[in-house]
Image (cartoon, rainbow over all chains, first blue to last red; front, side):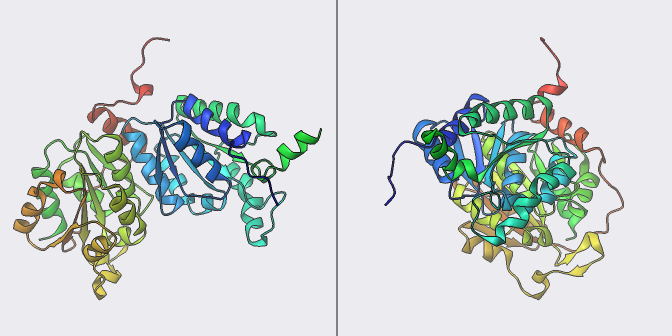
Length: 183
Length: 195
């Protein structure tokens, strides 16, 4: 039996604090299991951040583009598979119009994955982002997530670029925290 | 009515409202009907015009946001209707120019040619204010509805193809910056100021 804690994981509270500190007040998302921690933390501690559910990641990009045109600084949040659903929105809307946003991506297919169907996209994602020249950061430890999310968002909006923070499964599954606790 | 005539009528009725146009012929006709800084022409991202308009409407509740979509492009992003229904922004008007064909790519029939009912789909997904219009009079009446009292509005306008001969500006960054300035929220990068 696992121990259920009401405290959010460090990486999830960091992601929320980073988004908030960067001035983002809109998060357009498609849910994901680990991201449920982030959604709960936003709802409980950052009530000034508006969470907007999209039916598909590509749609989330469209909504985020409209929010930027309206003067907002939006964040996007979804699973890595959703980037695959969004390539046309990235390459024919965000990049040519120089529309900035921060993508917070919950990785699938990397270490500790159990579903083989998630592996090819997860494996390909960094190369796909490189091919589109979309910058990304990958936190090495749970305690790095907050700062990296904040810096990636600030840089995205000050330089008008789409940027991503890829959250490894090792961190979002808690394996990283468990290791830290033992050491 | 053909799409260009309908677009001209629409532009004459919406004042300074921002207009987001789907790529290809809806954007071309919007340009031909009257280029204005508050026009946001998309050049790609087929299907996303309604989503861009939704984000804009949420972020700027003080503006009445008009989207010019096509039947083929809305069919690429039908989930958008469910999201619009869930959020019900009173300041969003989604016009679907339904010519029952992929006009920009050579006139291949879309599913609406076989009876697919986009206004019915919008109603079924929760947009109660959803109508089909077939004449300029009906379009005028639909736009005159007090949509601010009733949430988002979807107007499916049955139009014939107008075969555009003009294209909007091709510079995407120019389109964006001109648009943002026009709606009173210029991009910081274009303004300069204190270091």
